[in-house]
Image 1 (cartoon, rainbow, N blue to C red):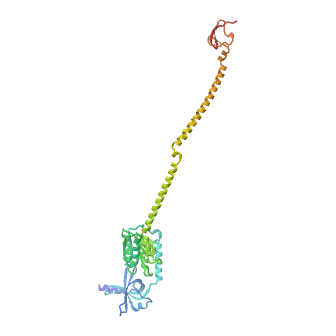
Image 2 (image 1 turned 180 degrees about the vertical axis):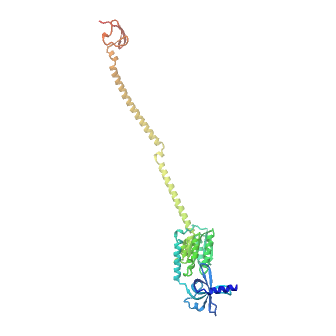
Image 3 (image 1 turned 30 degrees about the horizontal axis):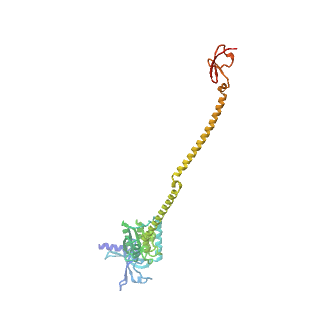
Length: 391
């Protein structure tokens, strides 16, 4: 094992100095020593390395090096054989400038946009009334108090599943990400709120971390981002389904106002009642108008009108028929007179007679009969028999 440790040390010793970036998790400067000990952490992969640096290197920096600061270190990898650990010996330390951080955030923003994670069409609508609200916030923070108090003021029955985590510092990304994933896996949680109060740009950097924003983008539960003040816009605001300008605003977004909803219900009931009363009044007015019509006031009126019309038509028909019969009777009488005037009977009445032979043939010429032939004489009063005698 000692031989292996020596071989690793020889291999590491041949490695050239490198530039690495990380976040200062711990800084130890013991009094009376010339060496400072730092622990650098990569927040994206939760990996840490020990770094040693001359104290005079830290003293020459323009500003102090607080825990949580992002730095770039130029260091030579070394392997400590007694403990079997890898560490870095730094000869240069520089702060990561705000401009560079903003450039990196802007680059990540373009990457996320190209993948469609900032597209408004993928954002989900918040439920009207969530079963349980998941809240990710700092420990005993004002953001937690603002969200819970304002939400319960609006809807007293709202339930919360609170996850108190570090919201700044080297462990913030890991803890917030784990909390979001845990709440997303809980079937009772209908919406997740990630809340933090305001702070400097460096304090809000965890909420622009790629690991965290991708975890939020992958969540199946709608996420509300309530980070900082209204002017602060970390990448989490852009990836989340809804952005709240403040934690108080987040409380207003996740639950309805019971007073407003009750007022809306009462107003709707009033409108419905007025609409029903108006409809009933209109129908009653229509019925009253129908009942006031003569045909309904006196139902026999229509029948009487029709009866009078029938009687009038019947009378006219009788009059017309009587007149027609009278004219026809006069015509018959006139024709009868004409017939009588033209009939043989009328001629006989004037003293004429009709001579017929025995076979009924009318004699028109004396030559048509012979002497002694039996003849029939028809006169107005009857018939006579006679024998023909030519004289």
